[in-house]
Image (tube, rainbow, N blue to C red; front, top):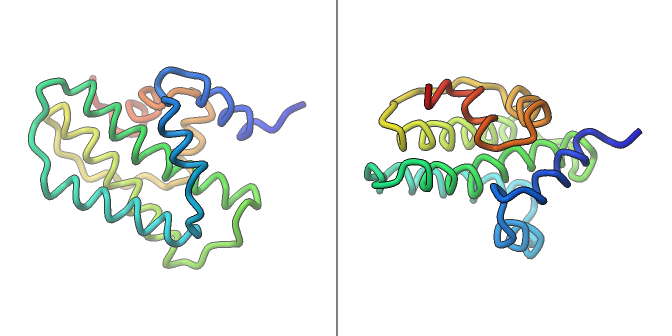
Length: 145
């Protein structure tokens, strides 16, 4: 039987929600896990600062899922499956802060202001259960209803 996390990764890459550019960008980088976490968190913070309600909430929300939620969850999965060394507590905290920031941005696309407090493990499990980024975000935020 195959590894469910690896199977989820493969399936997600095959879906339209993922996009070839995101896969290529993730594969092309030689960042350390800490650098990836810091970049994801910094990007989320920049997006929060310049956020304006989108004309097309679905399109912007999907962008946040591809560029933020997925790489954040993928970083966790890579750490748990041995791709990276074990994270220090501060790195785990920053990874969860990134998750929360991207989920909050996703919800803001739909006019909702939330302060998610979702463990990164729960987010990864939700993805494995759904194999879909939009469904994962809906499960974790309740947005849109």
